[in-house]
Length: 226
Ligand code: FES
Image (cartoon, rainbow, N blue to C red; front, top):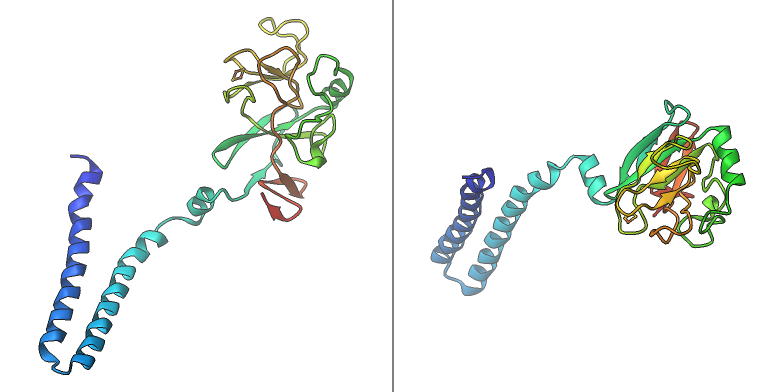
């Protein structure tokens, strides 16, 4: 028998006990009060007390969810500590059930992003898949940090982070970026999609903001939750 099946009789017993005590209270009041008007009033009061008891039973269940679990379930903004992120590293945080990547980029990477644009499908990010503050070649608030949703815009696979230059399996022209193994879509180190691959759009940039140099809030910008 599963754990959930074992719990069921206890839960049922609580509900039954509650309804029995309500019924007992109602019948006991009904038996001893002759005046019909007063009797009706007391029966209603007894039922209301029974209802409060049921609420009291439910309250511990609601209270037992931790604040972080409730916040996650509601899709609340997520805080990311980037203070220990070194050049080239990728940090993943989860926001609304999606992986959000934060990548620390080097000066050389940023230079390549400005130089190599002719092979890209939408180098200027004209299709709206990012907040306005990320509509630049770095697609970010601070050029050195990319914040991007790690889901391929073709059919939703998770691309691999491949920051190396010209690895044998990706070829001479690979300048570092993200490679989706499902159908071969390629994205640069700003999440911009290359032309001629299945993915139609650049990777999506979520709303985010800095609260200090080492902390990013994902899911909130300009003080407004997304
Ligand atoms: S899901 Fe990424 S290329 Fe198809």
